[in-house]
Length: 352
Image 1 (cartoon, helix red, strand yellow):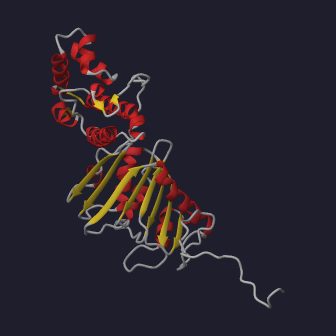
Image 2 (cartoon, helix red, strand yellow; image 1 turned 135 degrees about the vertical axis):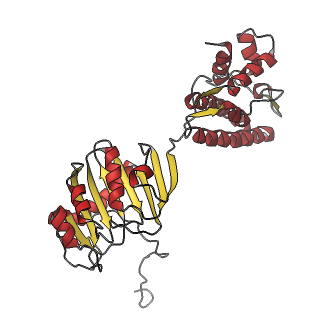
């Protein structure tokens, strides 16, 4: 391990620059600072950049923990330093989140965010109650807990097909996009299945009219469908395939008809919980369309429960039912009525 790398490791362990210089027997404190700065100037992999940021976040957390007792006693200088540390930590976390979205970055930009101390180290900083006591603070224990972030790919797709539009979709990634309607929800599902492999599919749509019945049949026979279920609006659409038409292609038991304008798709197997929400119907529609696509088990569970409840409640096939499903047994948000019932008011003669 190079001396510069050792400087970074010791800095992460919570040592100040004078202590680092003494431990590594460097000429002076300035040499320790310079080596730390040089390590930031190197072009490194994103993982190392994250390590540098995490080291600063860890150190900020330890400083925060050491100053906290003084701040709780009302020491104004300690409170002021804690506020600065909190603001600094927010900046570091934000930079860490951005770093996860890029494979390579120069640490020069990181140096602007990692504001290591100027002329005096916080370990030597005095407050109105004297020098901060860092004894007893476990500087080797990592205290930062960074919420796992999701990569986001936001795209405008004017002419690209569905496969190219969602290229790169993976676990921990969201893809959202605007299209010119050059592909349908069915095309989007088919492209997603190329990534996930065979899966159970759910499609909820207002208009299920296929622009190409043969395309629907190829989709059915592709070998990628472990199962498929449709929830469709029960009203007939002029020039569109009906609920019965979809039932003929995929099987009557695979279809439920109700009053719905929701448009979503689920693609689930042992490794994936893909949710697609979109303005698209199954049919091709050459207008601006929108979609969002994510792999999220918690989000998928809501739609899975909705689908299961609808299929349990409603009969198979086209019923022409124009009522909303009751969805008994599915948890629902309760309204805030703004009033409550109290005890009844007793009436009658005094003393009765």
